[in-house]
Amino acid sequence: MPGSVWHAANADGNAGAAGVSPFTLCQSAAFAAFQNYEEPSKWALSGKTHLAVSYFYLASELDKSPPTLEWMAASFGMTARTLRRKLVEEGMSFRDLLDRVRQDNCKLYFMEDTRPLGEIALLLGYSDLSAFTRAHKNWTGFLPSKR
Image (cartoon, rainbow, N blue to C red; front, side, top):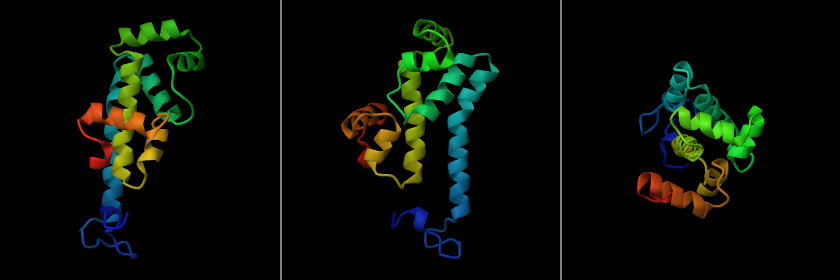
């Protein structure tokens, strides 16, 4: 977007008026992505494998179809009831996990600062912008356009 830090570099790749190089921005984005996946990785290492695998699965499939427990459980070759029980045993409900994945991905999309809100809503698995707007307001206390 014009005027954003993404356009701070000159055509030759040097830092522009904002003093931020594209390389620095890339490092920041990579660090943010790492932070999103740090906790799920810790879950896997601590034996919370259903929670970790479900997180990564939802993160990769969120934009493809409406995420449901039944849909994910079938992909794992188990019943929804079994997966629900395993997730709760490992410390999180399906709804809370889905919400967490959406929040984490939302932070990355906002950091990119290149996508319209409607596209972000679809990528996060919301049927429309108003559903995403309500969810974002619940997470942060403000509307996504006010970021």
